[in-house]
Amino acid sequence: MLLYGLISLFSIVNIFNIITSSIELRKRDLAELKSLGMSEKQINKMLFLEGIFYGIDSIVYGALISLVILYVMYLIMIDTTVYAFKFQVVNMLLAIVAVYLVIFIAMFFAKKKNAKNNIIDVIRNENI
Image 1 (cartoon, helix red, strand yellow):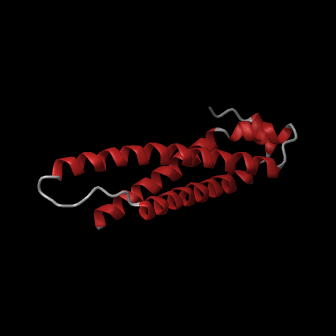
Image 2: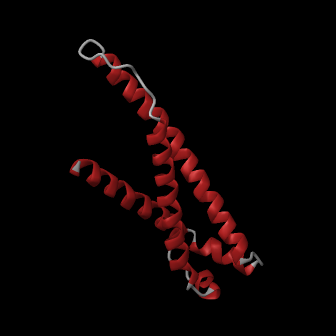
């Protein structure tokens, strides 16, 4: 159980790092969009849709890979056990909710961190 907790913790930290770095690298682009007249509501909607697409990608790839691995494990162990292969719908739905929760919390913190920046200073500074 501790191993599952550590793997989950590392995964959550990795998601936070990826999303925060992505928004930090696009800080200048977001400031340019604001300077061109994009409202805060529109930027929030854009980041929300980005979070949805991140979740869809991760869920589709993760679900397909995990189903293949589970089925291969079932085929390997079919001679030693009398269990039928069963798709766990409730567990999959919990995983989907958890993925979206982590993604949107990470988006919220990254957005909050970059909301304090001055548009002119961000555009003027070329750190990359």
